Length: 318
Ligand code: FAD
Image 1 (cartoon, rainbow, N blue to C red):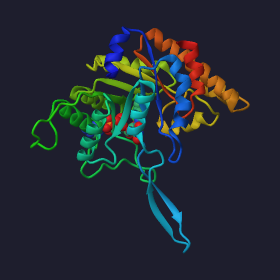
Image 2: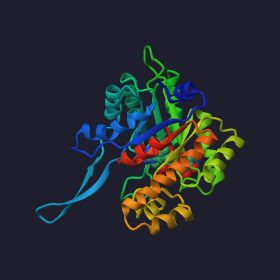
Image 3: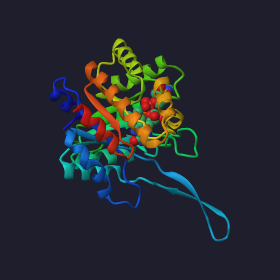
Image 4: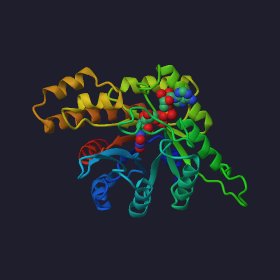
């Protein structure tokens, strides 16, 4: 079932959802299920599965020379979505990227998803490859998520890249896209970023999931700006509880977001990570309560491979 159908069925009640990462290469699917199992108590209608690009690593060979190797540390997004749907009977949302895919590979990936009974995708530009510094599009692929949205919308109306197909069937994907309450790092300003977000929605994106934020004021302002600019699709807030002391500097570096002074000070005062985790959970609970009163359709948690803080938060809310 589509994410938007789940939201309609909820009739204004806030739902619980979360994002998981594919296990590291070599790990068993059981390691992921162990992480998901406790969270099923809160009846997520859908679970997102991230996609991880290839990376370059350098291996020292016996002759002393370094060999550059391309590797995927977390392969298997599509298979994991199918495994989750099969095991838990819950819808999944695979993240699909512009980066690393030609348009034809995207078309084939979408066909596979339809065969597997997966009705949703989150269409993204994708992170730059580590060591490359900036996003470089595939020569036969898409640069921006909006172009990916356009391809999916075309496939949804039965238009494939190959125009000679005998009986092309329309796919039926519900399309999510990313939004940034504090602006995407590559955008010159919030207004320009909003213009491109609107473009994704105008082309056919059905809902927005936001980057993590720790100050609800930023989210409320973002929603207001979206509505004033004619972006009327559901906006799902992304929540990430702080779990270690270092995250107050790591998260802003990696995700280009602010940590409010009160939260940063509280975490700094913690004597260890266990104390910081408690502060992070408490902050996320308060944030979530306020977002629920605001009427958000879903609280979407970034688990980053750890379910216990999310469990603690969901237990206090649902
Ligand atoms: P876009 O919408 O393409 O925007 C990228 C930048 O280009 C923005 O600055 C935008 O303002 C600008 N822009 C857009 N269109 C144009 C245009 N026509 N001309 C000029 N500028 C334009 N990354 C992964 O690799 N794997 C994941 O699984 C993953 N999951 C994510 C989930 C969520 C909820 C979020 C918020 C992010 C996720 N990311 C993931 C990270 C994401 O891929 C990066 O943030 C990426 O840099 C931008 O992706 P986007 O889809 O928002 O890009």
